[in-house]
Amino acid sequence: MSGSGRPPEFPPPGGGSPQPVPEFCSLLEDSAEDLYEDAPCGYLSTLLDGQIAKINATLLTWLGYRRDDLVGRRSFPDLLTVGGRLYHETHFWPLLRMQGEVRGVAMELRTADGGRLPVLINSKVKTGSDGRPLLIRTTIVDATDRRAYEQELLRARREADAERERLQRLVVTLQRSLLPPALPQVPGLESAAHYHVASADRVGGDFYDLFPLSQDQSRWGFFLGDVAGKGAGAATVTSLVRYTLRAAAIYDPDPLRALTTLNTALLQQHDLNDGRFCTVIFGVLVVDGDGFTATLASGGHPPALLLSADGTAGYRPTPGGVLVGAVDDPTFTAITFRLEPGDTLLLYTDGLTEAHTGDQSRYDDDDALLRFATDLAPTTAITATAALGTLLDGFGDGLDDDTAILALSPTSP
Image (cartoon, rainbow, N blue to C red; front, side, top):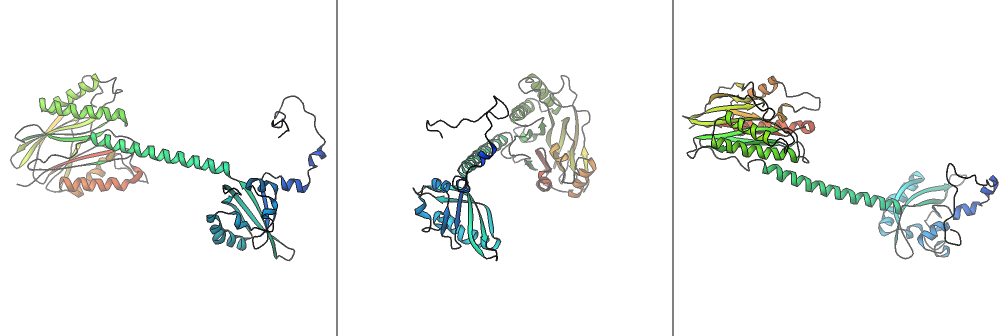
C-alpha cells in the first residue's frame, strides 16, 4: 500500500498505453531473505522435537505474535487447536516420520488473541548428506476464504436438502389426496391396490378407485387410469378425472356413458389442463349369485388381465377405445363377462409394462406379462398385488413412471 492508503497502480493487462519497462535485473533485486519473510504463504522451520527454529514475517502477522514469542520458546503443536494437536500426534507426525512429507492437511492454528486461522499445511523433513533427518520445513497457506466458501456450499447444500424434503412431503401429501385412503369392504369380494412411486420429487398422474353405486351394495364401480404428464398439472387433471367418473357413474352407471361424460369434461377444461388427456378403464361389478358380472369400458388403456380359478390367465381387451379427452367424438367399447370365485381381475397402468431392468430387457411385451400372470394363477387380489409390488421394487431405478395396480377377486361363499 502507498503512503496515501491507495492501492498500487498496475498497467492494464494485455493492452493500454505503453508503460516504461524497468531493467530486468531490477526485478530480481529482492534478496532471498525478503522473499522468505514477505512470501504470500507462511514458512516455519522446526527441530525434530517440534521446537520452532525459524518463522517468517507473513505467518507472524497472520498469528499476531512477535518472533521472540515463538522462536526457541514454543513448538509447532503449541500453535494448534486441541483437536489439531490430537490429529498431529495420532496422524500427522506418524505419517511425516514414515513418509518424510505430508501435503495438503487442513488444520486450524490458534492466533495470539485466541482466534482460529484455518490453514492448509505441507511439511517435509530436511535430511543431511548422510540421510539423517535434521529439521522439518513447513509451508502454511491461509485457507480462510476457502473455509468460508466451503461453509457457504455446506449451507446451500443443507438448504437445498431441506427444500427437497419439504417438496417431497408436499408431493406425498398431494399424491395421497388423489387416491382413496383405503378400499371399501365389498361383500363377497376381495380387493387390493398398490401404488409404486417412481420419483419422490414429482406427482404422478396414475389413479384408481372402488366405490358403491347402490345402497344395497349390489352394484359397484371401479376405475384405473393414467393422466398424461407429471407434476401439478397432471395432479389437477387427475382430481378432475376421479370426481367426474364418480359423479357420472352415480348418475348413470353405464361405463360407456361414464367415459363419454369424462371426455366432455376434459375437452371443456382443455385450456385449463393444458390439453392433457388420459387413458382409463372404467368398470361396473353387479352381484350375480356367488360371483359378479363385470362390465369394462376402456379409453386407450392397456387391457385388463383375468387370472382364472382354473390356473389359466388371459387378457380381456376392449379394442377400439381411444384416449379420453383427445377428440370431440370418441369411440369407446365395452365387454361383459363373469367373475367366478377364485378368479382375479387385474388392472394396471403402463408404469408396469414399460418398466425395464439394468440390461434394458423390458416387460412390455404381452407374452412376458401373461407368463407372469399365468405363474400366479390361481391367486387372490392381495397375493397378486403383493407379487407385482415385489416385481416393481426389483426394477430399482429402471422405473421411469409411477405404477398403479388394482385387483379384484370374488371370494367363496
